[in-house]
Each structure stands twice: as structure tokens, then as C-alpha cells.
Length: 186
Image 1 (cartoon, rainbow, N blue to C red):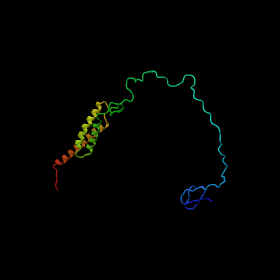
Image 2 (image 1 turned 180 degrees about the vertical axis):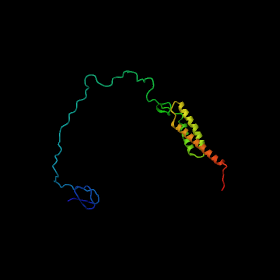
Image 3 (image 1 turned 30 degrees about the vertical axis):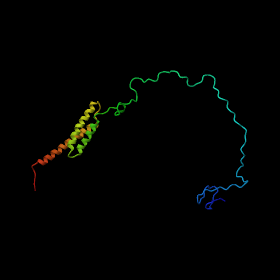
Image 4 (image 1 turned 30 degrees about the horizontal axis):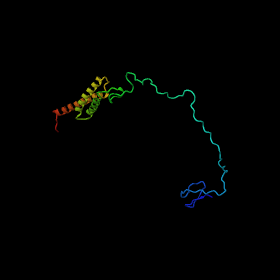
């Protein structure tokens, strides 16, 4: 026989803690008086044993380790003269002593304008001329600073020269077509 749920009356297995039908917590039946389940349990032993108290602390004989009374010691650590590791730079532009390229901005502008000179059909000549000038100035500033010229400056110069050549060729072709006297009307 199992446990009967007080809520819905379903007969549940004795191992269940909750009703299979409604989920209500089941109450285990109280054991019958005098019934024992399993081996009898001995009552706890009453003992008069008390643990011994430890003796009071006594310092061992002889000198004791530990901090000595205050005495003037050596001077605090002095840094060696010369450059120190992890120095801060005087400005935030170049960490760890890396050189700053003074022509970098001009080189980027030269490259952008050189590409625009190749792409823009009618304003390409002006972009190419300005890109060529900025590329030459940016390259010269890099060399004057003792650095290798930027690849962007060289790319800007090359793209600007190609853009100027293409623009001049288009202008000459248009002028040749417009100035020719060979118009035929049919």
C-alpha cells in the first residue's frame, strides 16, 4: 500500500515525496507505536570526560627572532645615472622613442589626391597637380628627418603623374576634335 494524497486521493508509491496526479507534497505516515524500522539505535553516551587545558604560553629561552628595534640603516636606493627603463616621453605622439614622420600627413593627402586625379574625369587635372606637389613635399620632409620616404608619398607622386598625363591627353584629344575642319554634313 502506498501513500494516499490528501488533496486528490491518488494512491502514490511510498518513495514519492509529491503526488503523481496533482503535485501536492505527500506526508509520510508516522510509524506505529513500538514499531522499529532497522537496527535499534543506542542512546548517546553520557561522558564525564573533559579535555585537558593547555599550559600557559612561555617564551623559549635564548634570543627571539623578529624585528629588531629601530636603527638607522643604509640610505634608500639611489637610481643609477643615465637613461632609465620605461621613461615617459615628453609628448604623447611617439611612445618608446619611435621617430615621428613629419611628412606622413602630406603623403596621405598626396596619395588620396593622386587617386582622385585618376578617377575624376573633369577635375582630375587640378587634383593631380596638388597631389604631385604634396607628394614631393611630404617625401622631402621624410628624407630631411632622416627617415625612409613613405610608400604613400611615392604612390601619390606616381598616381598624380599618371593623372596629369591622362588629363593632358584627354584635353589634347578634345581640342584636336573640336579644332578639326573636316566636318561633313550629310
